[in-house]
Length: 309
Image (cartoon, rainbow, N blue to C red; front, top):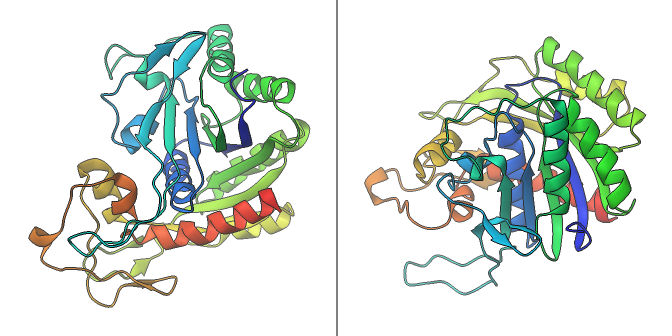
């Protein structure tokens, strides 16, 4: 059984599509790794696998091993080190690996036209035939809503994983009323299937201007927190839209902010001359310069504390 060496399994859910669930999943994974935890990300959004793109590993292929697949590495574990020749300090990292149907498709644009039974079989195979090895956290990025994949996922986890392993679910929403109403369904789904809700993340709660770093509430703000209080579940925090994070994912470029940009007490203002910015290196190292990194750092510390006690 491929799950036996995993300490904590966390589902990432959303009531509807387009709320940035995969974005939240990828940033939770990067932040856990930055805090020294070994992390795996399992993408079971079979008809729209986007995790490989978020980590910049779309061209990678899964390797076969006796009895299953070997997940694709994003980066290996790293011990903390002193400053290098450029004066950059090497931070401790936990390893990060991914598994997705996107790695198994011959072409990225191939459509996955499967009925429920085949989806169910694929989810079960992902849970039993991927050689994760010893790992602190497995994040499972799910499709929106509550479909065959979710039912199969929870049923299989309740059979294969111990109660201590199945930590619970993180639910992603946006501030709009239509998204929040769908999240209520996700919370009810978790309660009916005996999956604890670890918290709610309100994504796209504002837009960070790339020129002045001011945050504008495009979709309003606070609806996720109100809904979390209504259902008596933890509210993890609000995450704005940052074009610099999008540029990091799409182009692999390190975020650059104007002078005076401070987020969660961290001064993010860097070298304004973008030509001098180093865009090489690991995605996780460049992510530390993003305005969203300190936001997720605080959320993940609370999440780890809740899971590990």
